[in-house]
Length: 212
Image (tube, rainbow, N blue to C red; front, side):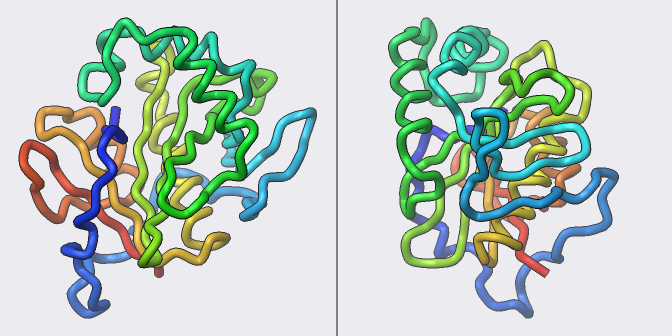
């Protein structure tokens, strides 16, 4: 839904002076993340990063690969994303295994966080990608959800949880996201989560939020 395919290096062009920054997060319709911590915590065999009222945001595991493979092969899900379809099962397994074995939030690298419903045995329904800038307290985020779970507000709720984790637990100052100018559903997801449109970058729109 929100493209995470490009390792962008021009985030320094975004507002840095608090006086010129876009507004901080407005009041939202989603509950705040609960008990998020910077190091994932083990729970029922999975490492939880944070939770919201309806969702668990956790480290991805190799068991997520079949579901990841399935929704990444949905043409509507992949429409504005950076991967090509058909998307190979071995690529899904490699990604899930890397996320499972490595610590999350390494500077400069993408972390794909699994999103699951609290009441559904933590089964994967989507993922939020996070990349921490190595030289400034900024994270770039992206979000992808299984089409079966579109329209329920899960994507915005997951973004809220991850953004609050970035600000409150990782100590970051800004979050940025890029999405295609024609991808109106992704734009609504970001806006509902509190991010605001601030610039264009080629055929993409730039969304931004700073910490309170």
